[in-house]
Length: 459
View 1 (cartoon, helix red, strand yellow):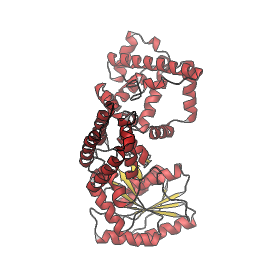
View 2: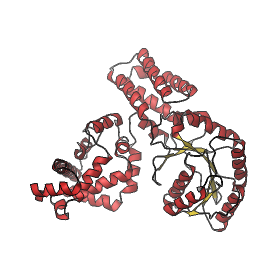
View 3: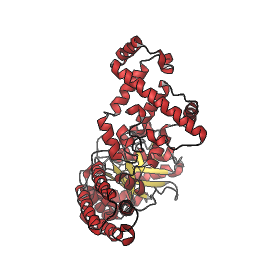
View 4: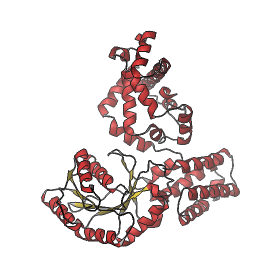
């Protein structure tokens, strides 16, 4: 979502960091460029003004301009002010530990992703928080809305309140809360109806449901692609209904990102969750420090580790570590890593979470590295026999031609995969030796943005 802004800010900061010393005029020039970049990213004007004024006041202090690395200091100041603008260093989690059952009221316009987000939150609460969750659709206006939630409930294995024909939203909310109490649910998620625009009927219905359910959380679901209109929408919903937090959806899309940067300042309400993709587990907690770090090219290594933990079992990680210590890394291990990478999201998105994301993406573009390439490489490895995967030395010319035909690729592509495997195997062997000696420096040389460009298997 922040690619355009990230690229522009990286250029500005690269210019600052190249200077040995900074003058006040240098800072002013950089801040003018930052101001333009933020406005082009659709950040609200008064938010930009407050941000730039705050950064300038701190950055032109003598202790900054006279420091050993003034450019780095200015970047840190911008980072700290951006964290503050986004909501501070402590993420605001969903409040679900009050009197049970807790009601979470989902509100927003039609098409914002309320129903899907309801199911994502339910899955997150059941798997991570071990809560017993009930979902209920209050949308009697959109055709098949209730059926959609039931399908998502089946997909996520979360219970959904059975619809009764002709039942009105307020009655559904009452029945859902009653069911939650008598059947021992921890959380009841109420998915309300949306409209194409805000009107009296929509607000009236949401207020009635709110009064009946007495929700602990009223979450406004907003499509990040709507830009500055999203900020106006949040302000209006808060004034007329009262919201406790915001969920931004489609943040993996081609949005300029200004809405996210403006919302906290304009509404005073925290962004609590981010919808990062179509899969049911593609929902991340909003962390201002990590978002700011990502925007400023510092990466989001914590977020990357969290994604990895979701797809890599501890037992599997230990097995791979033992193989590394022995210097073993087969083609079967390689294809397993490809699958885990795809489970974590798009390759561009994953590598973009590492420090130096701009340079990483440029390298990826130059090397034609993308998700399709991983699929081709996996097809090549799967076209081999189990014995060939474990012992690539068996792969003579005729076997390579057979594999190319079987995978729908060329002999050159097969050769490239084998070369990549050899490079990765050598890297794993080196890493294993370092692990035995207790020395880990140099491992980062094989990872993008951390000293060595693209990983060995992707060059």
